[in-house]
Each structure stands twice: as C-alpha cells, then as structure tokens.
Length: 80
Image (cartoon, rainbow, N blue to C red):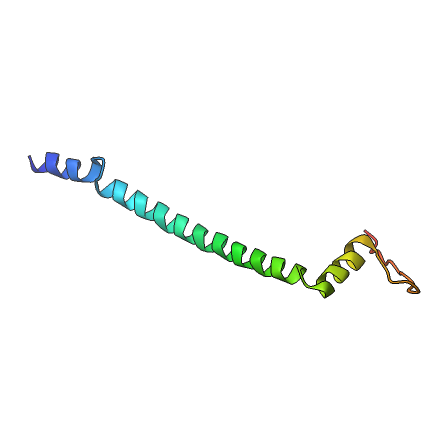
C-alpha cells in the first residue's frame, strides 16, 4: 500500500516530478522574459534616439554615403 501511495505521489499528473519539470520551465521562461523585456527597452531607446536630427544625419552619412555640399567623401574599406 505504501509503495502504491509513493508511486502515485511521484508520478501522477500533478506529482513531484511534474512539479519539478514545471518549475524548471518556469525559471527558463522567466529568464527569457527578462531578456525580451531588455530588448524592448533597448529598441525603445533606439527609436527615441533615431528621431533626433543628428542621428538621422549620422545614419544617412554612414549607411548611404550622403554628404553636405562642398564636402569630400572618403570611403575606407578593410581588406578581407
């Protein structure tokens, strides 16, 4: 009888093994939530930063090789 109760306690749908697995999954998901929330905060900061005129100008110069009238553009590429 004791053996039956022990097996039932360990292996039922809400037994100890299930509880341990669920807690491990909860910890994993909680850590993942922290990472995703940090990504959201970083993206919000980047969005606010890109709305500034200086940032728009910097992105245009770096990514699209834009220049102001009278400026000379030098493109330096690294050898691979």
